[in-house]
Length: 188
Image 1 (tube, rainbow, N blue to C red):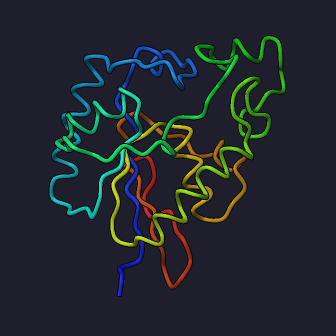
Image 2 (image 1 turned 90 degrees about the horizontal axis):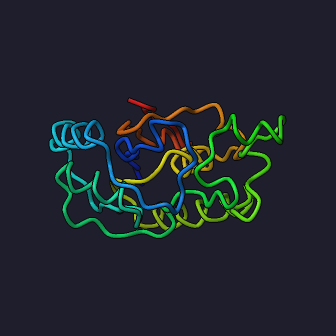
């Protein structure tokens, strides 16, 4: 019998844009010195745990975080790529709200980027595959996609993701209890 799926989520280390609050999807930024140090420190937090698989976004900041944490050959998983922000790439929330005061990415998506429905479909597909595999999976990715994954894991609407802040190099765990999907640890 396959062990129930448990997901360990790790957000990438700090980049210049994450530090400055700029929306970063496909812009392929490396880590800052602070991001490198924090990623190296992840090794001590994760090395005592066994994982059945390690998956990583194809973007540099996530791959570099995985490598610095001691996971040098993660499987690249395209579904872990950050939301495509389209016209909002590189902008801060304040810059966007200067022209769209009521904008909420979780509800409205991004022009010429991905919609909330597209994101929900993408993470639902990934969740279905990971639940079928079972066991413990470590995922290195990005703030908004990991928040989306967490809320869809517990069968909630994507808009709940706006209530789950996730810092750089934060570690979170998703699991289950008595057949119900759970968020066991968040933003640690």
